[in-house]
Length: 395
Image (tube, rainbow, N blue to C red; front, top):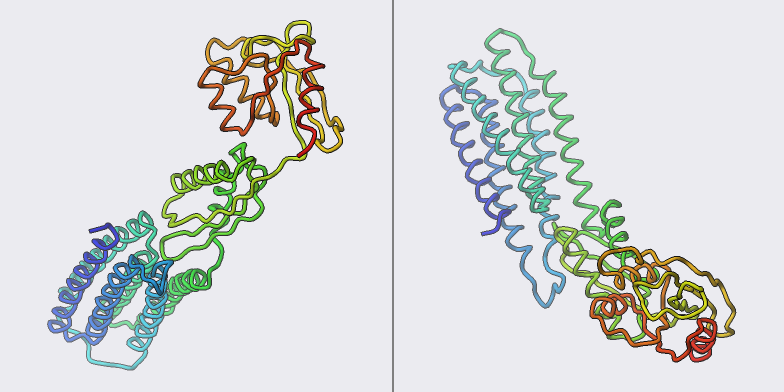
């Protein structure tokens, strides 16, 4: 049994206990206010049963509902908001309906209602925490509803205290309590309607998804991002421009991104990605250089410099041509991997070498960055670059 369902069962048990306590106090004291509050607590049992029903139904998937029945929980939360509104109305009616006989056994009634307030307070905190942990809107709504019960019980305490002292204070307390009740009810109502109308995911979650996607150097652009809630679950849609020359490779890249999003953001049901492999019209070529900055170095990680040239493929227009020191040269380990990762940050597409790469680490780094190696027999960097541009001049 999952946490949300277990919590819903406990909620039913707690509300039944409260009904028993208040019914006993109503018989003992003869208080009409406590009798009304007992009826109010009975509606809470029904509410908790609806919560449980919503949680169990929301997990089912059918051919008619391929995206699941997750929004049943939001419908339940919406229904609970109306119960909260009714609770406020009920309190007003009870307080303002007119004079009635003073209750008896006030100390016992006062103690009993105080115990029910303590039970309600403790359980509402527990249920709210579990609702946040599981992302269940119906549990959060039920916890808010139970807090209104605590406030209504405070009105009863005020009425009992006023009866004991000969003062009428219920009307003043009711105004404050009903204002708080309607505020909680409106919050739940608003959140439920937003989800039912497919409003967007909150801005913090959207920004986190955007950061995860754009952190991958193989993603050239995030064209569109949209996401929505359904119950406690989230649905995400992405349109990406992927730095991949093959459709299969692009698919593998998007699968990795989906895995990272599901790992870092809770309650993701599915991520739909439209990946567009992009044919690059601009290429960046890098060549490792020796100390003279002209000759091609026979070492990758130990090369003192790299010449990095970016140009337009269609007409060979040079966009940039620079010689930069190799940041991996003085590293003790993994020089080749560090050098390639740095080159990928510079936009590397083609790495010109005199010999094929044989080390697994640098090869994996190149493959992840969608870069390739071009082997040349030239020893002078200028000639090797001209040869590479000639071979790759057309998309």
